[in-house]
Length: 395
Image 1 (cartoon, rainbow, N blue to C red):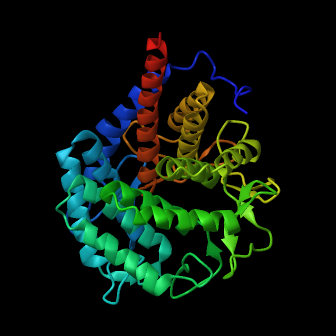
Image 2 (image 1 turned 90 degrees about the vertical axis):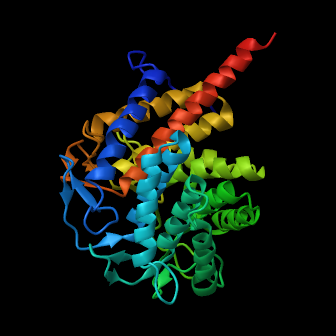
């Protein structure tokens, strides 16, 4: 499988230089920008959007997922680097989130306006997943902050109000269809974060149950794809489709699940191969969406699939030990800088099929993807160096 992997162009920068550039951009530019211009100094909470010059843009709704994702980003910086300022940014935002987004009868609402008034009271499984994920990371960054109670409260809401008799969770209150794998992917991510924060193996049991749904319903072994949309009984909709970015994201998550549980997760390599075969444009970027047979549906290229590619390549390196995957991850980081990341800490969200930028807004929701991918690149590159040093030290 790995012997035929192409190497990067030898003129590309060394992986260590790529990583140094990425970490400097993230820690010295992006995080300070979004902790300043990206925070509402008057009302509290994170802004939804900056323009490409790094100035805040007004928005009449602020989604729960943005608050939760940004809390994760700054809690992670606190855990990873001992960054006390980042810890305080996360704690203040978490206080604002719990005061304005938790519904009186349970669950996190979808969106509020700038002063915290609810503008969309739907309680989606997707939003609950990110509230749990943020709480778990904040619990690691600030163990006495009370985030553990919010983890338990949110799981209780999911189990009592959104659990489906056919497995997994309904989309939202009020209910709607089609059902999607996407909220469950992030619930799996939240399970792993909860286990890391608490050590409670019950979260691994939850993760195994979600993986069971993946195997029985969402993954199509005949086509090698992860379906996106389903009816209430988890039957695939007509004209099913898949997203190469989600393939890479699941590849990485399945590797993390395997590390914790010992499950073999053979689907990870299949998802990676399908994304490589059908999802890559001539410029190397992943497109947004494909039909079940691999034909492109959306040939535009958002930023977030490129970050998930970095993680997918890293996961495959961890699975195989083939350094070609590290090269591919490095190339994906370089493409991220070439097409999306801006020197001021903002980014372009999307480019068209011809590589031209679309839009003039940097959505805050993307920083979760970017930070996680760049920090994984940093982590795995360090692991690779340690592995190589150990091999060289053998008699």
